Image 1 (cartoon, rainbow, N blue to C red):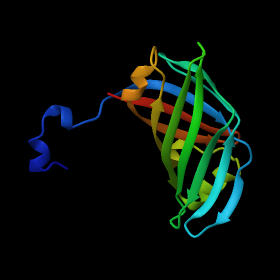
Image 2: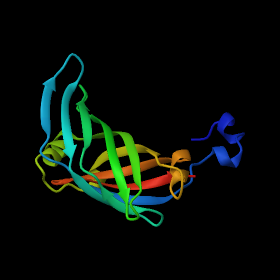
Image 3: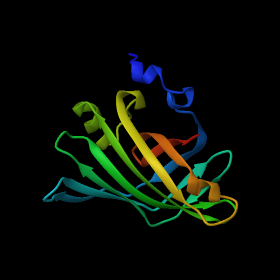
Length: 164
């Protein structure tokens, strides 16, 4: 649907351009349940390892990352993740992202049991930001990204895109 205000915008404000940045696979230990808190139901996924690969950077995910999850009253799950990426050339880059996952109750139950679910059957999106040292990867410090996720029994896989 078009509105007069939208119609009057310059072309650069009418759409978002992206390019592939990386695909990342995370290994996650069994979820640690914290339970009901004064806020949401909390659980934490510990990330001991993973890999990432893209045209401009590839490498491994170092041990020590975590995914602090909040299961909200509408049964959606929000993510708050911190990771250390180590590129193939030995550069350490911090990656953090917030995300949200939701879908029909039966689909989410199957996911949480580790069953195979079609990624088109639920919504799983993230918004990564990076902190890189000066040098080859410092361009990441000035970039925003979006990602589309899918949950496997061992952990998630994300296709991450740089927003141009």
